[in-house]
Length: 257
Ligand code: GLP
Image (cartoon, rainbow, N blue to C red):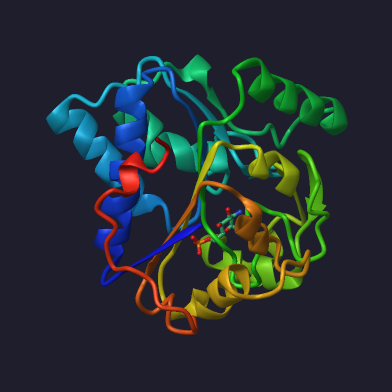
């Protein structure tokens, strides 16, 4: 695990984008795991810029998103389908058929989850997985208490997560109660993880993830077991950490060698 602390949100976004760019230039058919939430928006903006200004090519990339609310149609403006289309997919040259977001309207959710796992496996697994973190230490929608070996499935959202995400909905009661999410075990199989955090509101969660005990009470703490994880955080998100971590890691993009 490599923890990188930066002064600003723009810098964590750029650092993450540079890693993705490097991996994509080395492997044009990269399998990219994507996250929603406000945190990865800067990374997506930077990837769009790289595509438009520097010709970064997504034509052979396949993407798998971490999660989706159960019961929201892809056209719903709070669905993660909509989020990804608006904030990334429509701005880059990725064919729609190569993008995957869990289907919150699936009739047989269990069968869908098995299919999603099989699709990831068919492509050789996820090369780089982007992650945000919930204030309660969740990754994707793996809430505290999630099994560390879990696979893609339905999870009940905690009240805290529903309150945190209520800011995007008209009222708190509009926030769905359930979500389909990749499991912690699914996420851990990605070859590389990039965990991003921005703002003081994530400081406790980042401390628990990076320096706390490995526990299902903080699902993000599993990153401690992963062999190639970048934790890229702003100084305020890092403010509760005891360890000393680099502000830059110039050779970070070649870590996989
Ligand atoms: C949601 C998503 C997570 C995300 C989290 C944090 O719950 N399911 O994948 O990491 O929100 O969101 P934000 O980046 O807006 O703080």
